[in-house]
Image (cartoon, rainbow, N blue to C red; front, side, top):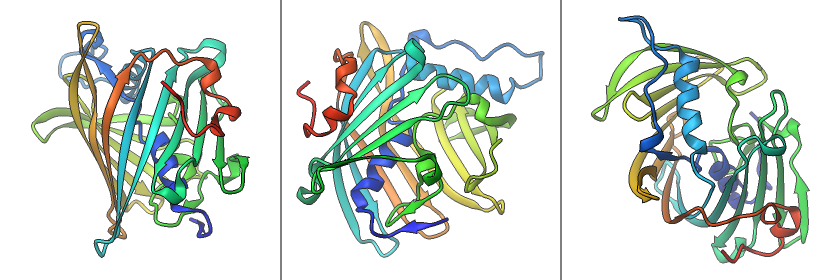
Length: 288
C-alpha cells in the first residue's frame, strides 16, 4: 500500500469522514425484520446488508459537526473539527447521495474542503474533489488513487463513499451477541481483487439493523482494522431516529487509532443541488 507523505493530514480525515458512514440516520419506525427464512435458517448476507444499507436513506438531508481525534501508538494526538453536509438523492438523476465537508480547525487547515458524488448506477464509481485553499486549487481524485494510503491514516481512497451491494459477495456466517446486542455476522468479500482488503466481517443488529462492529482483513487474511460504533436516539417528526454518537477505528497492526465524535446534528436542513458543486468548495462552508 503506497504512502503519500506530502499530503496534509487533514485530507486524510476528510476521506475518513466520507467513508465510514457518518451519514447513517436510521428511523426506528421504518425498520422491518430481515427477509423471512425457513425456520432455523439465517437470512442471506445480501439481505442483511441491504436492510442495513436501506436505513441510510430514510431522511432528506443532514448537517453535523465531527470532532476527530487521531491518536498515535505512543499517545501523540491531533484533533480536527469538520462540518459535514449530506443530501439523499434517492436514485434521482442516477445519484445515491452527495456529501460536502469543510474543515474548521486546526487553523492551518481551515477551509480545506471535500466533495463526494455517490452514484446509484451499477458499475459507476463515485466522483471526488478536494479543495486546498493555500493553493486555491480544486483537484479531482482519480480512480487509480483508490488504494493509496496517507500520512497518519489507516484508511484509503477506496474506503470513501457508500459501497454498492453488488461490489461484494456477502455471506451470513452466524449470530453473536456483541456488547449486549444480538447480531448477524456477515462476511463481505470484494469482487475486485485490486484492493487492500481481503474481506470484511460486519456485526449487524438483529433488532434494528444498525452496524455494531466491522473487522477489516488484509489480503493475507490478517486482521487489519476494527471499527466499533456507539449510537444515540433522536426524534424526527415523531419517529425515533438512530444516529452515530461516536465511532472508533483501531489499526491493530500498527496501533494507530481514530475517534469520531458527532455533535450539532440537524436533520432535514433543506440542502439543494447548488450546495454540492465545485464552486461551493471555495466558500469555506455553507450558511445553513
